[in-house]
Image (cartoon, rainbow, N blue to C red; front, side, top):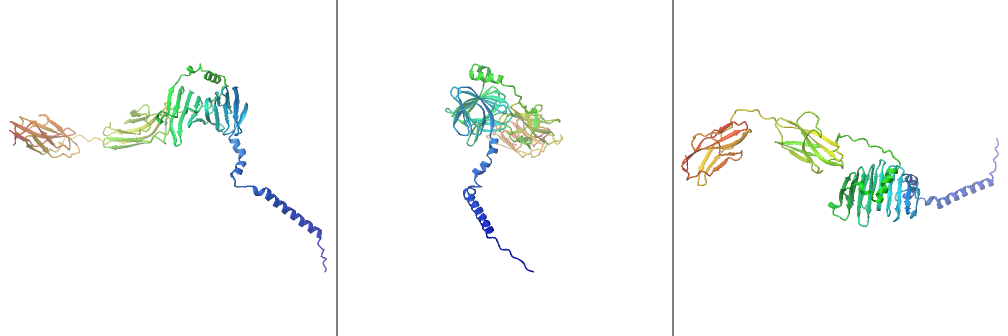
Amino acid sequence: MYYYKRKANPLKWFLIIVIIVAVTVFVYWFYLNYFSKIDFFNDDNQADVQTDVSDLMNILLVNLQVVNGTVEADLNNQGYNVQTGNMAIHVGDKIKTSIDGRAILKFENGNTVRLASGTEIILLKSLLGEILIKQLNGRTYHNVVKRGDYQIESLNTVAKALGTKFEYITNAEKKYLAVLSFSNKLSVAVNDNEGMIIGRRIQENEKALIDLNADRNSIMKIEDFKTETLVNDEWYKWNFDQDLNEEEIVIEEEPEEPDFSLTNNSLILKAQLDQETVSLTWTIFEGDDLKSYQLIKTNQDGELRYPGSEVIKSTSNEADLKFEDTNLESGQTYRYRVCALKLNDKVVCGNVNSIETEPEDEPDNIPPQSASLNTSISVEGVSLNWNKNTEEDFKEYRIVKSLTNSSPVYPADGFIIVKTQGSESYLDNQVNITSPGTFYYRICSLDKWENVACSNVQVIENGHVK
């Protein structure tokens, strides 16, 4: 069988080669002019990819109302321009009022900031329900109605607020600030590079006056003020009227804090019995609103809580974390607990710790061991020495002296002095080698049951030991 072999078409192969060369040239050109210039590991390129997401995270719709004068905004570092109406505010954007300007910023979450004339602020962070403002100079009035982290900072001083109305005044030139609370409370802290220098919580109708030129102990002062005395000031009257005229906003109420609660994270109490003393120590309260510590005690059944139980120590010193209880009785079980009384008069208590004291011994009528008395006499007086009583129920020695009874005893013949265990000597300087007459001495030992045992009798006669 024969096969016919068809000749290849030269034109076909020519076209194939041309196409391959053209594709190769195009790919090479694309690589040189575009693809090779992309740095896939460059942070800037990665940031570009995330721009849309970060922009959404850092935008908060704000309505800017110009009350009077000129109000300017520096958006995205493009320089100050006059602004009115709604704006998309980014982190780092600035707003300032002229010398005769006044403005209102209303955030989408319901919070309001009013700027007085000559005021400049920067929005450092603004997430949904979260606002952080830096005030460069001037004064602002804040009506915070939305739950969230609302902070304003100036000259290393931070005020944190929730559901309150307050004013924030900054004098950057003099390094002086003032924070006035018109409703509820807010915390004010002054910081340095190493952390917080001082922090205080101010209540309604209190103001914090901060002088950054003062020493650490005098930086912040808290004073009271009366709101009604400010209404004659046009700035305050305008703000108070604005508060009344604003649309009523329903505030999310915080859950009511109970009057009494327990914690396992702080106020951890330890108790140790040493002889007749209970040593008590506890850990510091974790909150920043401590009013006082209340250390309570009971030897009765029932719940141990404050108020209601016996208070054995009360202190407003946050670092005072110990106490020694010596008011104890034998055979008792004492329970202790430390509670924190907060500024809002709510109470938080820690664990309960129990201590049992040794039961008291049963009374007996067994007298203690009698002492062995020795005496000597000199110009200084009569020196008495006796052996030490080491019994556990020993109480004391009583030295008996008589001029008439040759066998004096206690209590019939009284005593001239009491000596304790460890003091087994005595000098009677009322009698010496020149003293005429006869003197009878005896040491009587007593135990805690008042049982008595007396020593041998020593006789001094006309200045001599007989």
